[in-house]
Image 1 (tube, rainbow, N blue to C red):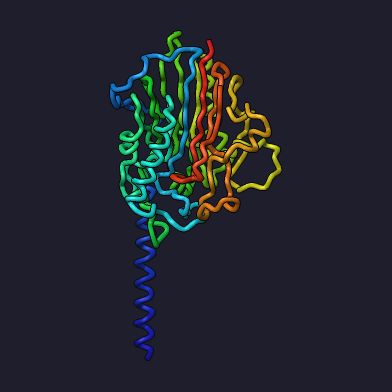
Image 2 (image 1 turned 90 degrees about the horizontal axis):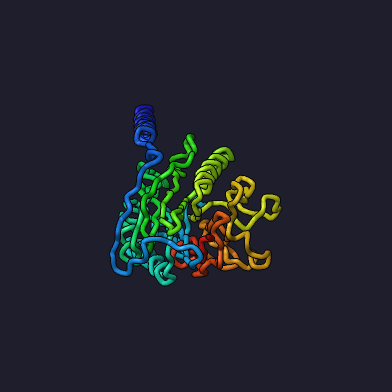
Length: 365
């Protein structure tokens, strides 16, 4: 009997030892494979087609349009919930579901015919989206003259949750433009240096330049800021860096539009006492440089209240009136850009946990 008990404990000890060794090896692998994409990386501008090419330059006083849309790596159908938000799944339902969602999102963008489309969470090669090249799918769907891709991250294999490991992710930001982009640059946001960096991963914004016929440039900033419990210092560092770059372009005489997923509650003021999710911080307006403001702040209070929230929480499937919703997406413009109209396109979160935000604008003389 004693011999049997000893054997059982020995087997248990061996199993526990193997698990601990595997866990230690995995942690070493995570740290050894972690890397940040270099800052100030020049991006490739792709010419899609000469067909339907717009003019070589923008013109002051003319109406143009821009759209921003976080496409959620093709996973967030209305019944999808995400494990990092407290939901269930770490992968999309299927490869076919990813393809359908990305195609649907692309067709929605194309239907609005924006002059500039800023899309976030576009996967190139990720476990969670069945290795579908979503950028390629979007290029086939959205008619545009130029396109630029800024890679946000290329993560190590995340072996969590254990029942369906999230895997590795290669994803980023895509800009589509009907006008020639002369050059584009990737800037690396400051991010967490703690263990949480393996969950929030890298963050960046792109800076793309489009000529204007008065010798100036329209400088388009596209971003996807951090979420998932980053510190106040990280948030403040990201905003300060972005603000400094935008201010530099304005002081050079250029027009500036900054669009994307800010991961802040853009409707709320800092003194707003309304109950909200812990991650839905109001954006600190006082951190913006002079001559810059959010387009949403040009709406009346009634218009802002009626403005469809651009994102839903993914801790559960989308249930109208029950699921928490918030406006995370939008545009900042410099005061030499006039916002002519501003709207959120209500799809009921059909293709993503976000819906697009669309604006029309003109460049002032």
